[in-house]
Length: 200
Ligand SMILES: [Zn+2]
Image (tube, rainbow, N blue to C red; front, side, top):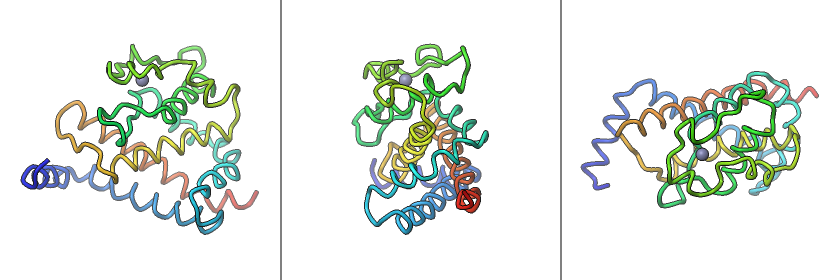
């Protein structure tokens, strides 16, 4: 993308007020959450994992958290900014399939990638299946479920802030808007319930 194209993209995104607002909320919330886990669980990259282990039972007990987990995995698999075709990486694919198939969020009617329209280059990774769920964890565990949700939120955030393709073309634009909205709302819940999580 050259400078002219970038400017055009920035102006388009700025004209979409709700999306702009959700991008900013996600950015800020993630910053605050990262502050929290680094301050409380150590100033290194493991702090997010220790936060998840400590808070997973609490957060997974909230219906609203399960609802967001569900919404993230009933749409096309979240891709990675680190892959050239923006297909999903192994870790996020496993997290996604675990939430879809192993966490009892859908009862008998689990969505599958073909019927929800996960695109060919993503299905082609070979990760869009139940086997990937077992590679995350063999059975249900709320800590691993919460970890899967957090890793997906982190991926959406990383895609925004580390150079994801800024597509204005449909349907990719609407899909990005939806992912940012979900991640933004989910981080609102995480922040909102932090104090309560301390009471345990
Ligand atoms: Zn998929």
